[in-house]
Every structure is written in structure tokens, then in C-alpha cells.
Length: 89
Image (cartoon, rainbow, N blue to C red; front, side, top):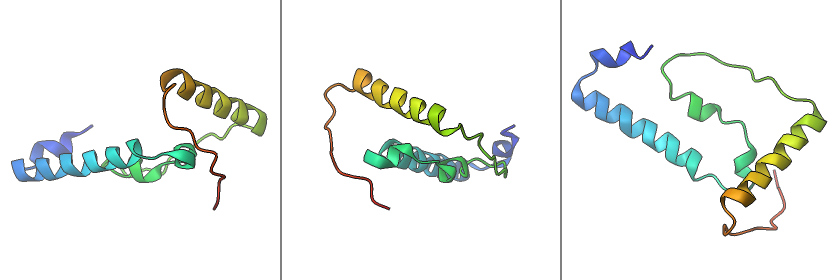
């Protein structure tokens, strides 16, 4: 894995690092309802071309996971700004 990097020039490696950093920043900077989404664009930055299909929990387990994730944000980011903006498609 990652042997594709061995053949890249310095300039190509720098371009690859910049591309990966931009993808990470886009993911990191997601906020609000965007935190809840499936992120195939981030995974597409990897060289291996797969289309992993996630195992999707049933609704009760999924909602418990969402609540746990939101509770973890309260614990980890107690001073983060809060929003009451509703979800809109």
C-alpha cells in the first residue's frame, strides 16, 4: 500500500500533500448539519479505487449513535457556539 508514492517526484509529492490537506480541511471545517453526512469525497482522495458500502445501522441504533456523538461534542467542545438552525435539504 502507498507504493504509488515511491515513483512521484518532489513536486508531485508536494501537490499530493496539498490535495490531501485541502480534503482534510474541508472535512474539518464542516459544521452544523454537515457533521452528520457520509463523506465519500474525503475517501476519494485515496489512490485505491473502491466504493465501500457502509453497513447502515437500523434506526434506533443509528439515532442512539447520533445522540452519543452529539453528547461527545458537548463534552469535548463545551464552549462551542450553538445553533438552532433547522435542517434544510
